[in-house]
Image (tube, rainbow, N blue to C red; front, side):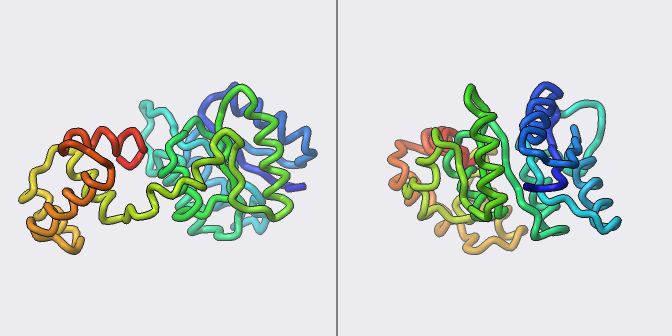
Length: 222
């Protein structure tokens, strides 16, 4: 079993419960962090001391308070940790249930397992940790197993996500075109953007832009 594990979770009750699950698995060294910045610094320090973490268990959402942080979400933490220590194993433990976001965690951030918080989540978490230790990948909670099989979002590209986010901010065509141009996003012509929006409306069966954004939010795209 893993020897050294870091739990990034801002709720004490959940952090304690996860710690107890790790103790059941005979993990010898368990550390906790309530802030993403603190978790990242722990990973960095462990590497410098030549005693790296084997596994990171992280939530995705962290409540903001008076403290300013560089990393404000589990997604940002995972991306930073993976860049620093590419070989570390990562299990996400979250209430997230949006197919696209879960897929992106596996495809873009390279996590090893996703466990949904719920009534039966601790046995699922233990099972996932054991699976990751045994070199299994793409492990996901039973209740969310459809997320990785869902092919309805396969055609959605990063460009479409940027476009949907711009629309969700209330930007009109010319404003989106300017934003894309300034960000180096191609194509950035008003005509091309309009055609892409129409394609997305057809793809999602949306009646108008407002309906399109509502669907995108439900899917966790924006």
